[in-house]
Image (cartoon, rainbow, N blue to C red; front, side):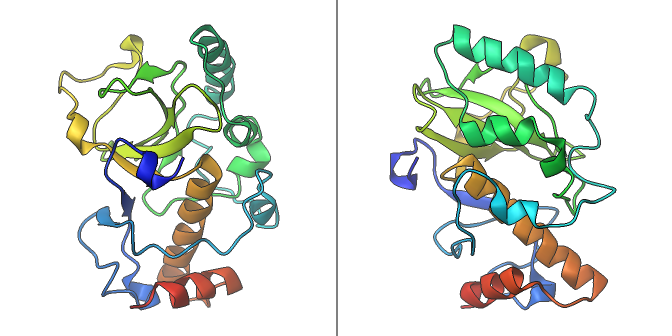
Length: 224
C-alpha cells in the first residue's frame, strides 16, 4: 500500500540516532520519537519478499522472537484460520517471517520490543480494514500492526501507543484513540528492513563500533 492510499497520517516511530550523527533529523525525544515519514531515506536493500538482506546477518542470542517463542507459532496457526474465515489473506512475507525462527533470531531491538502475534484480525477503528498486532514494546509504550484490507497485496504497517487485540487479550480499560494510529511502512518487509537497520545503527553507536556498509549508506542518505 502506498502512503497516499492510507487512511492514516504517515510518521515513523523510532529511537534517536544521534550517535550516528543524525541529531538534526533524529533527536532524542524519549523512548520513541514520532519522526517525519517524508524525510526517511529508502532502505538500501532489494525487497523481494524473501528477506535475502536479513539472511546474511548473524543470528543473535537475544532477539525479538525470544519473549514469546513458545506462543507465537500457535498464534500464527490460529490467525491463518481466523483470516480465512474473515475473507482475508496474510501477506506471504508476513507469514514467512512469523513462521521462520531463523529470521526472528537476526533482529534485535534496543528497546526490547518483541514479537507478539494477535491470534485474529480485529476491525480497525475507522472501519476501513483490519489490524493484526505483531510487535510490542517491552513497556507497552507502542504497538505495531499489520493493516489488512481485502487483498494481501493491499496491506501496510501502522503503529499506535494504543492496544488493539481480541477480547481475551484485553488488559486495560483505556479506550484507544483512532487518531493515534499512523502509517509507518508500505509493506511488512519494508517495515522489518527499516526496523532492523535502524536498530543495528543504534547498537553500533552504543557499542562504538563502525557502521555496516548498509548502515553507512542509510545514514548518509538521511543527513540533511
